[in-house]
Amino acid sequence: MLFSSPNRLLRTRHEALVMTESTAAASRQAVLEAARRYFDARPKEPFVPGKTYIPVSGKVLDAADLARLVDASLDMWLTAGRFAREFEIAFAARFGLRHARLTSSGSAANLLAFGALTSPNLGDRRLAPGSEVLTVAAGFPTTVAPIVQNRCVPVFVDVDLETGNVAADRLEAAVTDKTRAVMLAHTLGNPFDLAVVTALAKKHDLFLIEDCCDALGSTYDGRPVGAFGDLATVSFYPAHHITMGEGGAVLTDKALFLRPVESLRDWGRDCWCEPGKDNTCGKRFEWEQGTLPFGYDHKYIYTHLGYNLKVTDMQAAVGLSQLEKVDGFIAARRENHRELTRAFEAAGVDEHFHLPRPTPHSDPSWFGYLLAVRDESPLDRTHATRYLEERGIGTRLLFGGNLTRQPAFENVDYRVVGGLETTDKLMHDAFWIGVWPGIDAPRRNYMVDIFQTMLKELLP
Ligand SMILES: Cc1ncc(COP(=O)(O)O)c(C=O)c1O
Image (cartoon, rainbow, N blue to C red):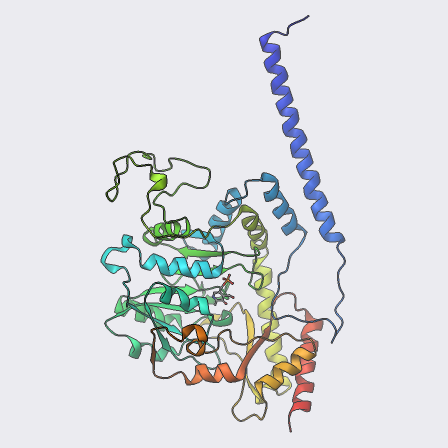
């Protein structure tokens, strides 16, 4: 027969489509399988004490992470999509919160969380230029930078030596009629005193942002940190508890903060359609805002002066795969911290260093192991870190030390309340070593051995 019947043609087309789909699905599975095989075939370096460097932090990746990354790449969606949505839902659930929004980094998350407090959506409660925000100077610069970038004033309070956190009993004295918020990080995974800080926030009607970039999995009174404040932030840079390369998240339970976070992240727009979607609000051409003409496309109405701080679906896919392993990562961090303390106390390291102490009522998911040389010890911090580094043990300082002494803060308007003596002590005498899951028992034992020889060799 020269011509097929229309029905037969349709059938053939349908069959062809089914064939293409099943061929594509089979090819996809083959690619994913090959990715897993490739990962497992990669050579693994054995640990050689003294030769293999032990960094303070690192990413722990497996074949499943690579397969998920490739899976997202095969979608070729590229911007935030199904993996990002799934991650945000699963991540918020971990904290018992309603909302998580992915962003390009922990620093971006801090910028968005703080920016949300300045949103017109908050009406009279919004932070205005000159509003004061209680924080600490012993920390990471991008916990504080958003305060300054939004023309507010950081008010620095000193910290406690052995927890590395805000000296909570000094906060009350720092409150003035301009104080509007508290923005603090849980230092190296150790929660700050959430009982005192949340009570202070309630008493003075202050917003609270918890920077949990170093504290994923830490709990206070049995509840995850990040679930106490108005907003919380997390980082997924490779140093952190889980990674997606670059990435971060803002968490909140309140829609009031969620919309500004989304808007600021997504160019400042009022529209909340996900990438590739239109008319989620159902009245795309019926809005009237500002002095724009009625019906101006909601996609192009801007209610904030925003950024673009979104992630790609490939990042989110790796994050999802990492999230499945987070409890194991947290357990390994806790074990390393516990075992280092046990061994350091047994070896008398605590006679020369203040060892880190968990904040009462907390169970930290440690980011690092903080050591501060005791005043009465003849040891010198820089000699100690050089000694350790030369023997392959990575060390880091407590980030910016005392931020007020950093060049970037030279012309910044800030206040200091009650002096920063302990902050300065940490800047001069403290450093931290790693507890990340890549540190196993042989590495840990080597670290303890080197601390012991250091005490013998460096002490007069
Ligand atoms: C406490 C704290 N906040 C924020 C950040 C910034 O995170 P990111 O590197 O993802 O921008 C870091 C980085 O390590 C951090 O330690």
